[in-house]
Image (cartoon, rainbow, N blue to C red; front, top):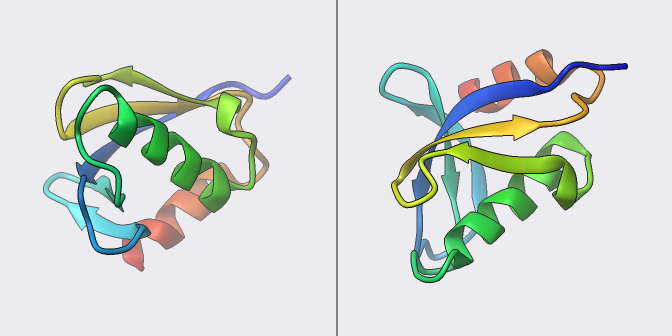
Length: 93
């Protein structure tokens, strides 16, 4: 069974368009979502955007830290094949 894959993200809520890619600060993945940062809407949008980027179901993506902030730790469980490579490509994109 594949282990969970964790990484840091920097969320940009209220963006004009959804986008996953780029590096923030010490290596967090930038995730821009149109949803506002109210009542968990941005967190849901982040889960959906990351699920699409990694090719997994939304319920496989969980915010494990930073629920109420822009800096979060996200876990993909089970980790998809090549998750580290996908993350590296997104960070450089």
